[in-house]
Amino acid sequence: MATLLSARRAGWRDYLELTKPKVVVLMLITSLAGMFLATRAGVSWSVLLFGNLGIALCAGSAAVVNHVVDRRIDALMARTHKRPLAQGRVEPVPALLFALALALLGMALLLVFTNALTAWLTLASLLGYAVLYTGFLKRATPQNIVIGGLAGAAPPLLGWVAVSGHVSAEPLLLVLIIFAWTPPHFWALAIHRKEEYAKADIPMLPVTHGERYTKLHILLYSLILLAVSLLPFAIHMSGLLYLACALVLGLRFLQWAWVLYRGSRPHAAIGTFKYSIGYLFALFIALLVDHYLLLNL
Image (cartoon, rainbow, N blue to C red; front, top):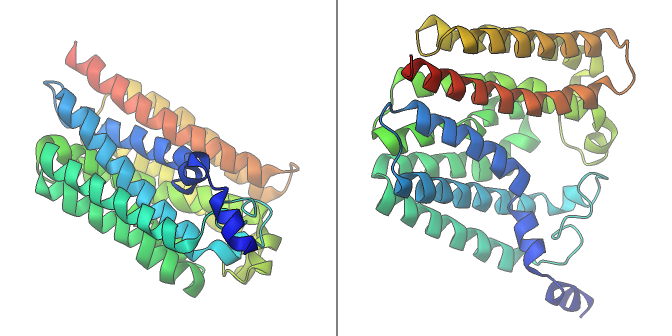
């Protein structure tokens, strides 16, 4: 009875929270970048609006499934214990029906307003995150975020394909940037929340291999990320403006990783995590500005 009463108190804000809107917004920034980088003629309003809406709805659907699968874990962690499913404000079955509705609507929009390839790639990304990562990898291996990160790296490819209708080297390079960015981004948070992951019995790298090992891998991945982020300039996808921004942003990321590795600053892990979010946003904005600057030269 108490559970039923709790579920009845669920409002639209609870269902919105299930979609992880802040994460979806960051994904949409990279999706938009993929769209605008794919063309020199501009993006049609229907693809721009309904394409991104379809991608957002599918991403939100995957996030809802993540909430359902992780509800018991979320209840044990300070960062997540107030989530709607962890507190019982939303029940699993209504949440899964909500996820299904989001996925169906998102796929329909993509099929009608973009193309079939975008829709199926989006579905593959949804299943990769909701089923492969959340349902299996997260609990199976400390390399969960490395393997599962490919699903979260897909939005720029989806945006590119929504406009162009085909896969090419350039959007795959954008995917590679996010793929390299994901481990240092998430492992920094995992260090900050190490005790909570241990309590929830999630084999995150700091829990299974220790903080020193994880910090070394954050440093190594930050070096890889710096190298990968320069490739758009190397293949003439971008110009000097992007190169300068990528160097400045990447060296700053590397500095944060070095500070974290040395242990010379309190709360360096959460500082690295927060910087990584701004880094990805700024890097893709630099790509866009550089792209349109080159068009006008």
